Length: 89
Picture 1 (tube, rainbow, N blue to C red):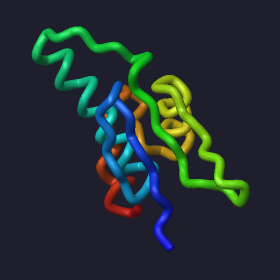
Picture 2 (cartoon, rainbow, N blue to C red):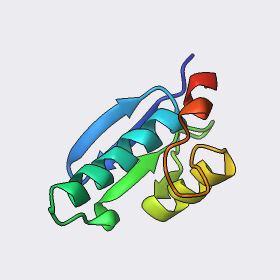
Picture 3 (cartoon, rainbow, N blue to C red):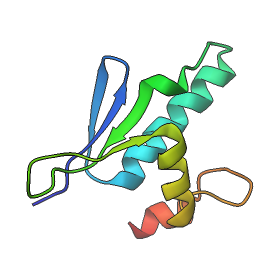
């Protein structure tokens, strides 16, 4: 069974197969918003983890997701996506 991760951006919902891909999508949304000079509300961005045995999901804010991505090596020390890690996952 694949873990179902959900990226939420306000009312927009994106299903992802894993945390790395959910985070990369979130990262790209923020980067695109900044490049397009559009306001980016980080409070509207969150990643919901797969359901646990009780049916609850853990919610990761943008900051918590970035910390987890850093711990997993998904970001370079410069704060960019580490594409080598995505090829492994």
